[in-house]
Image 1 (cartoon, rainbow, N blue to C red):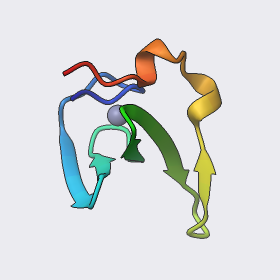
Image 2: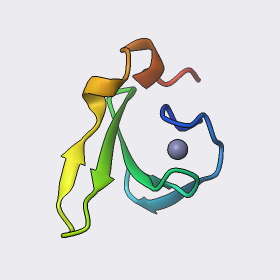
Image 3: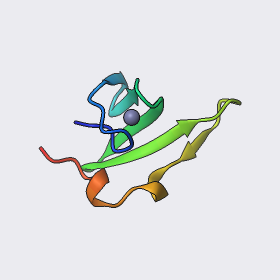
Length: 62
Ligand SMILES: [Zn+2]
């Protein structure tokens, strides 16, 4: 799987269906074949980046 943001494969697993991109520092979660992206803000809150991507980019191709 690749990061939909930076296309890097440098993805680390941080939990069940949760991953972290070490290249652009966003969190990825996988749900029903879709990638959901979140950015961790400086105060620790998560903001969704899903609006930035097309559905195709967020669909996992197996
Ligand atoms: Zn990335």
